[in-house]
Amino acid sequence: MTDPVLTYYDISPQVVAFSTTRRGGCSVGNYGEFNVNYYCGDKPSHIAANRLALCRLLQISDDRLVYPHQVHGTEVRRIGKDFLRLGDEEKAQLLEGVDAVMTDVRQLCIGVSTADCIPILLYDEDHQAVCAIHAGWRGTVARIAMKAIETMSRAYGTDAAHLKAMIGPGISLDSFEVGDEVYEQFAAAGFTMEKIARRYPALAANHQPAALNSGHAAQKWHIDLWACNRLQLEEAGISSENIQVVGICTYQHSDEFFSARRLGIDSGRILTAILLR
Image (cartoon, rainbow, N blue to C red; front, top):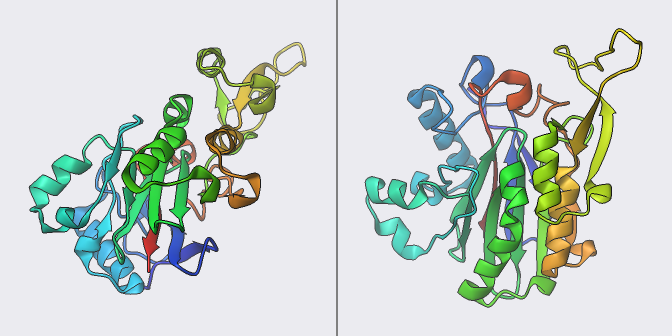
């Protein structure tokens, strides 16, 4: 087993921000090689070994690597120093049903798991606080990014105008084909659809456009989750210059990053995380 291979993000010298790749761990098959998610079917022994390898690389103890059990909701959990004194069962209860975590505790690494959904990291330099957000399409429709910023404002006094944000690897507009019912949920939620949606030829099972007998390809809606979340961050008050969009499509790069649409739900997950130095 080799060290996990991470994709690092240049947010600030004061933080370590990264996404894990599929390289460097001991998991196998669709979980290979590096997975630390407890809820996707991987072997607990592999998850434990991968966690320890990541903690060694980050130079933190295992109890300082924290990520929730996500449910595509909008619950935001603050992780304070008191959290570290809790037992494992109490910690698990606090992290159950949570889709964003935030902290102002140094040397505490918080993150979210994704495999096509959109991870977002926030950094408040003024108050030395960070947040990790899981924004699947349901969370995006429910504007979890905006809720997380509001929660940081109440907890730490965060001013969105001074936040730095990073939108990590996730499924791209070209690859995120959706049904009309999903399109309608975005429209009903007030999104400007001409900014976030396009109609493309439908994808077949082999991920290529499917042609009809008439010779014309069926048209399906595609949603740009990167743009949806970037627009939310800007609406919340973050300047466009302070928002990074990594632009890595997990669906198109499933050899390096986990993609549930490519590999199935019984596969590993990317961890996108941030740590205050």
